[in-house]
Every structure is written in structure tokens, then in C-alpha cells.
Length: 268
Ligand code: 15L
Image (cartoon, rainbow, N blue to C red; front, top):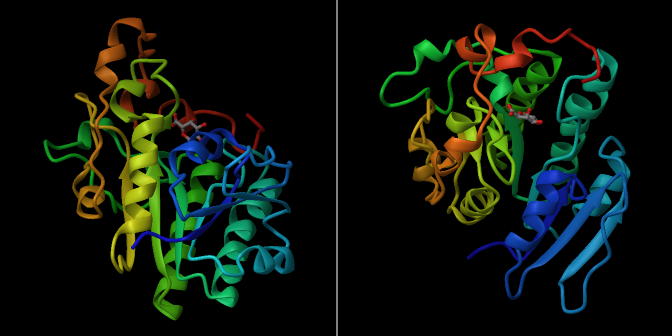
């Protein structure tokens, strides 16, 4: 049975907004949390809103009460200062996991990123694709924080038995914008399918899986996500004619593209 009450952190952010309409189900309540107040419930929408910081353990433990699953999207989504990355992304994720544990929420889905492994050379992708659980090779402080997110998820699963699924999300947007996105795009509808699969998979345990669409030019493996019940339906190739070509060099050579050369610790 799919969970009845789901807490979504970062609900006012880009992916949070995409998921709001796509995770609605009869009999399901969405508790939407963000540091910036999420939009109020529409008539007939089974939504509660919470304005809180993910680094506030008391507030997060309260927000996790009576929750079956947590989707953790909050945090910086690009490069930032070391202090900001440590606070929002690393301490924030630890706090969310700790709050879920204290409140008895048995499943946490963590937004990781391709930038946790951004220094994997594109040339290393074999026909099966780069595995979902390839070891971390972060390309930035941001990428480091996503590798730390995965490690914290593993810790809370091993110690306490919480189900934790980490999603190495590619470029999640309405449409791919450049040539690189053709391999790593996650459509909003496929994002809905992926999160739904993670919510519904029976006793998943701990997993790190790729979050991308079924792109013709895909470099990463979908096998691990498919085992959880994810069946993507979109392909970035249908937008190929309209995208910007890759620049030579890092944008072609490494999975993390421009993140591998951006100045470390400089807000992007
Ligand atoms: C990410 O992890 C970022 O949050 C997003 O802003 C994009 O940069 C995306 O990766 C990407 O690699 O395109």
C-alpha cells in the first residue's frame, strides 16, 4: 500500500512544485515544508503546509509526526560556500534523518545528484550505463554534500533499519536545454513516476539509484531504479533539435560537466 501521509521538504522549490500535483492520490495527505511558505492548499487538495528550517531538529521532529514517508528535497541545489553547504545540505540532511527516526517515519527518499559522481569520465559509460551505486567522485562542494547525503542515508539505514533511497537526479526540468541534458534529463512526469515507485516499493532497504528519463543518449544505468518499480516514459531525444551544443572540454568529458571547473565554494 502506498503511504498515506508524506512530508516533502523543499516543497516550494522547483522539483517540490513539480511533485505537488504528481503525487496527489485519493486518501493521501501531503505535508509540504519549506523555509519559504509553500502555496496554501487549493480547494479539495489534501495538503498541509509548514514553514520551517530543515536544520531545526524540534521543528522537523514535529513535522515528521504521523508521517509514513519523507521526501527530502531541501538544501542548496547548486554550488555555495563551504559553510552554507555544510549547514543546509549536510547538517540539514542529518537533521531530517534524525527527525524521521525520532518520529517513527519508516522511509526517507533523499535527493542526491549526478554531481555526487560528477568526475566520472563520460568515456567510462559502458553499454549498461554507469551503475546507480558507482562510488562517489564529487565535482564540487555541492557534489560532496550529495555524497555525504548518501552516506548519511546509509548510516541511518544500517543503524536503525529505516528504508532510505537516494536518487542521483540528473537535469530535472520541463525540457532539456543543452546537448549534455540529452543524456541526463529527468522529465517532470518521470520524476513523479520515480518518486512514486520509491514510495510504493515494498521494504526497499537502502539504495542509490539514478533519476533520469529513458533517454536515447543515456550514460547511466536505469536497472537499479527499475528494480524499485520505476518505468520512465519520456526521452530527451524528442527535444534534440532545439538544444545548445556542448562546449568542447569538460562539458563533454565528465558527467558533472561545468560543475567540474566552477570555482569551489563560490555561490553559483
Ligand atoms: C543538480 O544537481 C542541480 O541541482 C541542478 O540545478 C542542475 O545543475 C543539475 O544538477 C544538472 O546537473 O543539470
